[in-house]
Image (tube, rainbow, N blue to C red; front, side, top):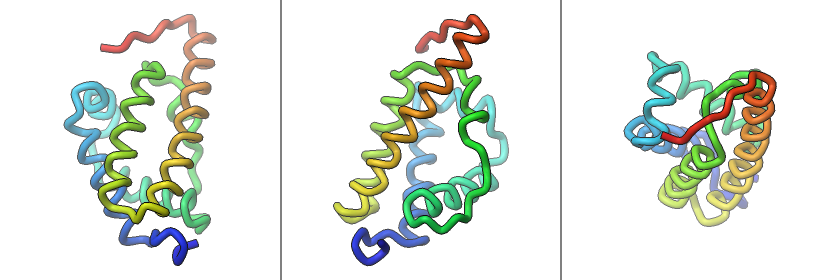
Length: 131
């Protein structure tokens, strides 16, 4: 996998740090993350483990992302913005094959998390708005 995609731990670390650097200053996504993450280093380390597991099947991530994202006040437009920034960053730091590999996975993850967040909002009777 690493040979075919050019992905490795160093590239995934650069991808995660570069992507979340953009997210943190993004006018749409930044405030959502700022309300929930005060210490970024542990979050970034966890996200590197997550992407290592997702992209390279290392099994390093042992969390449960769906419950953590289920109650967020987000719409599909938030996920679209997340994907735009992710695609942009992947194109900057990955080989074309590596970018395609992680982007395909990011798109599936975004759809799954969106469904989970919508289900949670319906159960809670909340209707999210994009600010």
